[in-house]
Amino acid sequence: MDTQIRAKLTEFIVANYFFGDTARVPRDDDSLVEKGIIDSTGILELIEFLESHFEVEVSESEIVPENLSSISNLTEFITSKRSAREPTCQIPASGMPAL
Image 1 (cartoon, rainbow, N blue to C red):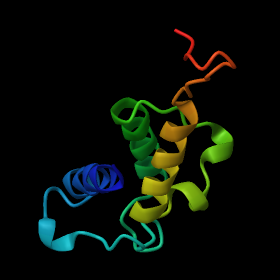
Image 2: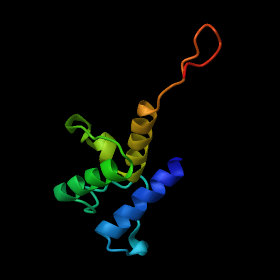
Image 3: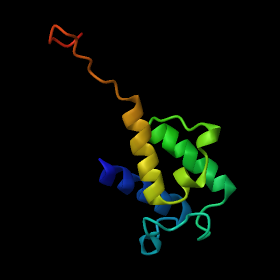
C-alpha cells in the first residue's frame, strides 16, 4: 500500500510541478519547499490532491512540515490518516462478530 501511495504522490508532483519531466523526480526525503519544488500555493494544490485522491481530510493543525514536507512524510501521513479511519471489527464475548 505504501508503494502505491508513494507512486501516486510522485506522479502528482512530477506532473504538476515539473510538468512531466521525469528526470527531475525528487528523492523521497527531499524537502519539497526547501528544494523550491513547491511554494505556498503548491501546498494548497497538494492538500486538494490529498483530500480528493486519497479521500482524507487535512485539518489546519495538520498542515505542518512533519506531514507535508517530503514524499516520505506525505506517504506516512496518508497511511496514518487512512488507518485511523478504517473501522475495526469488534468481536463480542459470544465469539461472533457484530454485523
